[in-house]
Amino acid sequence: MLRHLMSPLDFSTEELDKLFDLANDIENNPQKYAHACDGKILATCFYEPSTRTRLSFESAMTRLGGQVIGFSDATSSSASKGESVSDTIRVISCYADICAMRHPKEGAPMVAAEKSDIPVINAGDGGHQHPTQTLTDLLTIRSMKNTLSSFTIGLCGDLKFGRTVHSLINALVRYEDINFIFISPEELRVPDYITDMLKEKNIPYEEVIRLEDVMPKLDFLYMTRVQKERFFNEEDYIRLKDFYILDKAKLSLAKEDMLVLHPLPRVNEISVEVDDDPRAAYFKQAKYGVYVRMALILTLLNITVA
Ligand code: CP
Image (spheres, rainbow, N blue to C red):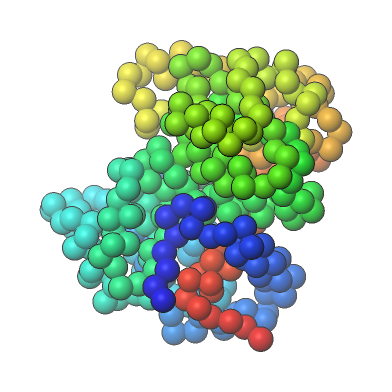
């Protein structure tokens, strides 16, 4: 059966457990998987800039023995001549076995999936969802803390436009005993549809403005960038871009075993002086992104390795 990944909720928590077990096995036994995708082709169709998502997908397929085609910029594809996403994916289906698509418009990968003969993976659609980042975040939490339940997570920064935040909250509500603390300026608060969903499910959350006030409570701090590309007004962006800067002084208020996560790219919101702190987990997180995408490619292509 043809299966796509549009949202982290497309996989049950049991299926996610299997995916993460596979990702951990790939991490520990990379040679076992080195030819699992021999003869297979991944297309990366990126209509929006990316470093981690595109290159980690390409690294993942290459490490599985497969090959990669694609474009990294809408202007170098026939989208610049007016071709629709639906037509593009019909053609890509003739050239590749699986496709990862990033698009600035919410829902564009879903439109592609409806017309596709091959699995389509949403690699980020506008301010909506970023499911493979969420898989990366969950694998990082599970691998580094051995659990996906009973913790307090602070999500800090641009909670309005941050698709990584929206995807992660949606995914975490399926686990037991998670407390959410949303840390943002008034203008960048988490959207109402998310707080409505939390209320409906009786899941506890707090909304605060000052990071320092909640730092001692956190088991995870998920920092995010204020996203210039989603602002309509440059003045608002300039006013809000440095609202949060995590530095050593602020980190000194945190638990000794708290972990700092960030989907990256970072701009100023985490000072580089924090990078050497053992709690800084964001570069390790980027590495987990390769293992989980390798596991995802195998799963969507129905390839098992004995
Ligand atoms: N985390 C993430 O999506 O990074 P890129 O925009 O570089 O892909």
